[in-house]
Length: 289
Image (cartoon, rainbow, N blue to C red; front, top):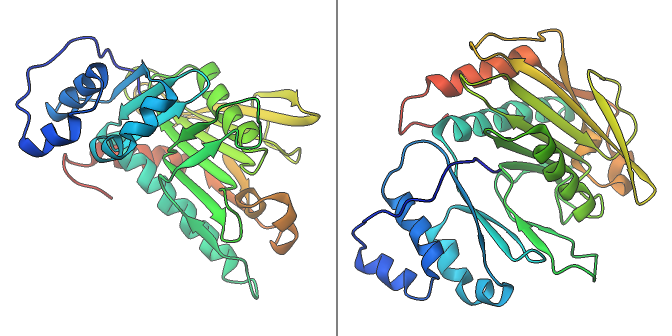
């Protein structure tokens, strides 16, 4: 998820022999991003750069070695390189653990239950079904999928300083770009001490009952429903404590597998989201949940 930060200034960084070998074929603008990351800059780092698809393919092994996370839009010829903050990573990890436990607790009572896998930050390819597009690649912060499926059913992203409009586009791209293999996208916009931290949720199915702010869009004859609500204010106080993140086990899988799952809901209170954010803020540097 995009964590916005000004990446305009170049830095003088000593390059090791291994790094020199890895970066010998990397374009200068991307190499500068690597040098900034190696300089131990504080806070989240995010930058989007032009990169032709043929160049991406020629340097992909080096990119995978140099950068933990990057997304690529082949149609626009844009690579997005990002380094999340410690709070971002700790929040994403803890949220994944909480959701994993809720799923396991629900499936434990189901005979011959399908297996749902937590794949964390694994590649999700977009627009493979659309011959008019060149495709896209994203590494979400977390994802859950039915073991029988090739793509996740649920994706979650943790961002910083995005607008609701930009997060809505991210969520829509996951759903429409996978031909609705991804059915639900949960985005968290963490503002720390600069504003309200907000949950954004988009679904491709119509059984949404929680409705603090609901906007419907019709794409390809199917409805997408977008929800948004704050869970912590700029002073670190929990808000909307009576609200829930309302998920279902069927959110983890394509519709053709949905009959194999019980109708049991998977709910996460906003009080728990606020606790997770407090937990992430309290973690010392260099630690993980």
